[in-house]
Image (tube, rainbow, N blue to C red):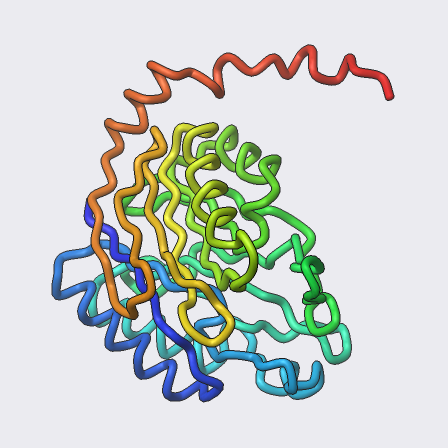
Length: 268
C-alpha cells in the first residue's frame, strides 16, 4: 500500500501551518496514498522565547479545532492521517506532545503522549512539557499494524522492541530532530537500527528549517533507506509491503531468537 511522508518547516502561526497540512492531505490522497504521516510540532514552531504559559495557552484538546479540521480533511479525502499537536494537560503551564492516528472517516483510532522528553544536549523539554505515562497499543491501518513513537523516543530501543513484540509492523515516529554535532549521523543510524533489529518499516517524518535538520526517512525492514528527503519541503511516497516484513522476519528472526528467559538472570 502507498504511504506518504511530509517534511515541512512549521511557522509560529497555527493557521498558516494548518493550511499547509490540509494541502498536503489533499495532495497525498490525489496521488493514491492510503496514509499520510506528518512531523512532530506540525501545529506550530515554538521558539526559545515562548514561555511555558504561552505554549500552554495555545495548546488544544484532541477534540479541539486543530485536530477536528484535520479529521474533516481525512474524511473528505478518504485517507488515514498520522499527525501531532500540543495537547492541554491538567498540570499548570505544561502540555503533552501528542501524536494521533485517524482513519479515513476522520475518527481518531489511536493517540500517544510522548514519554521520553528531550532533556539532553542543552535542551529541557520538561520545562514546558509533561511526559505521557503509557505506550499506545499498535493499531491496524491500511499499511499494516503501526506503533507510534515521537522523535527522542527513537533513542530508546526498549520502546521500539516493546511495540514490535506487541505486533507492530511499521513504526511511525513524527519528529523534530534538532541540528547539531553528529546529529544527522545519529538520526540516520538510529532509524536504520530500529528497522533492522525489529524487522519492521520505520516512517520518520521530520521538521526542516528553524533549528531542525530535516532528512525525513522511510527505512525498510532490512535497513534499506527508501526515502531520504534531505533538506527540501514537500511530500514523498513509498510502497509498504507486508510480505517483505514477513519474509525478513523469517530470514532474520530476531524477535523469535530473543532469549527473554535468560536476560533477567543478570544480577546487579
